[in-house]
Amino acid sequence: MTEAFEISGVPSEGGVLIVADHASNHLPDEIELSIPLDFLDDHIAYDPGTAAIARMMAENSGYLAILSANSRLVVDLNRNPGEESIIPERSDGVEIPGNLVTAEERQARLDRYFTPYHDRIRELVSDLKPSLVLSLHSFSPTLRSNPQLQRPWDIGVLYNEYEAASRFAIQFLEAEGVLNVGDQLPYSGKQLNATMDRHCEAVGQPYFGTEIRQDLIMEKAGQRRFADILLRTCDKIRTALA
Image (cartoon, rainbow, N blue to C red; front, side, top):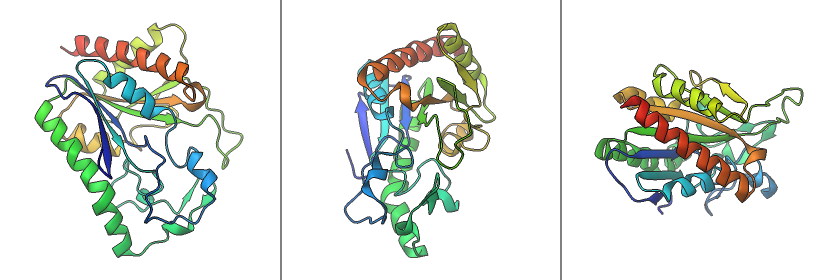
């Protein structure tokens, strides 16, 4: 592990690379957000369940995972460097005073936590030439800022211009017979797909994005269930794309 990312699994050419942008809720000692620490256990700080699922999947031959090592409140790795929300000043109704930073402080965070993570993803894609990249996220079924919003899906599939792997993912996930599968839900990959746009869309790398409902993966049994579902799904997609 570095201060920007963790690698889980054994690298192998032509395998599956799992990318977990929001795996950790860790807050580095030098960062002061000026919010109650309870919020580090909230969905605004990370994607609960994704780290465990990524590590479980990476126990299998041909699977490698790269996981964020810090909270998305430090820097949001699934954003573009020029976006204001890369260091969020507000998230789901919570003000984050410690993220009112100067341009120099902003650049320092990017240099320390954002750039090394994305440099490593670029190297892994270039060196290993994965048959498939899985962008692994989870979503909250409810939002403080919009309590009327209903987010009933068990899992959603996200994509931008490249759709082939995602179409197969939707087909194979629905074939499990027990999942409420969202197509471009709970939001569209055409709006929020920065990591995959950079490292996959831009170089013709097959990928699909997934969002798993957080209340289904808070415990080990649910994490194991979805790790197994995604292993089956990825293996089927690799065969279908071959």
